[in-house]
Length: 130
Image: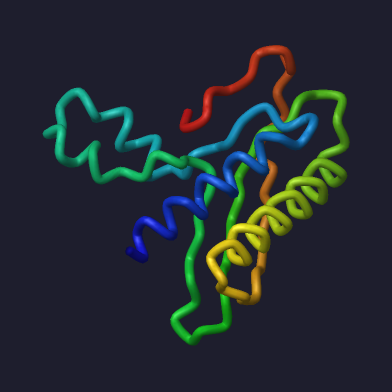
């Protein structure tokens, strides 16, 4: 059940981040990119267990202090990186709080946003998970 709850939370986070004007995609972590690079030679089960929401991470603090959310995204050239990061932060935090409210789980939420790159061609949206 916890895995399903976290998966739904990650989906809400990814959708909220991608809805922010100027955000062109989510940036996977290095481990995900390496896994995808060698996927043709790995057994299918390894890829099945790799998270599909690259660029977002949610961790429930073991001490019960709430959720820690991390978003790694790319923004389109011509957007102020700081403004984009703040907007992503606000959208994601609101989405997580709404999701938790729907689950009757009022908990603290800490959101960290990292802009990993600026895309020169903003009309070409980076597919989620790449």
